[in-house]
Length: 260
Image (tube, rainbow, N blue to C red; front, side, top):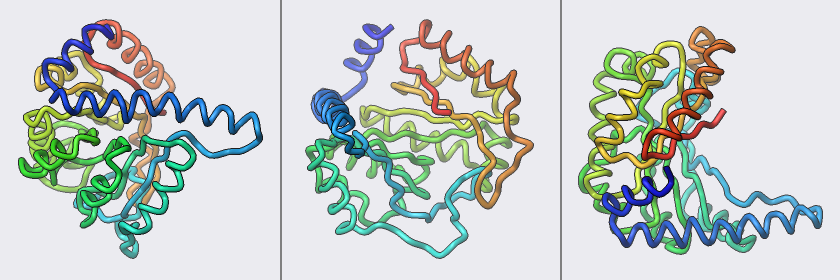
């Protein structure tokens, strides 16, 4: 499976981006983890990579989102991010997850990414702000993988995310990334209303046809201002998610994983 995944990446990703990924994410992450292990032995606790929420603004209003998009707006500016990332790099870190809100609404996002060409960033996004021009900028940077959140198709997606035409707009952003030959992933928060649509071989085949390189499945948690406990999965459905992921890893040329 991993050989097939590598071969598909070689066919579908800009070679310069693969080199950046292999060095900034691959080799440097191995070093970061080893340094982390040595810190633990000394009783020092600093993680080998960080997930950073850079703002709470978003163009959507999703059920179960932990970010308070209705609260007072706040964001980490370029200077604050440079200090944070700089401190992490002094500990040997090179990989950072960038979250929001919606990170592409941050006016200094590209300045942050460009300021650290020696790092690798995974940007969690709903994809709607990724225009053709935005995707070209990401390709020029070379140190970013967008992870596009797809929470259902059609009506389900609109209901989950509090807007209209959400699925088509997110898919358009996804396709812009893939057209620019970026390393691109898709994330789904699995809940009662989307489990049958998106926890399926049909959906995975479509993502692979489009060119997605990895797929993350989350289990829905009812948190935030629009929490909805009725969407949470049962114990049987949680087992179904784990079983599906295990089976798909063996059968498809994409990295399928979960965060619970």
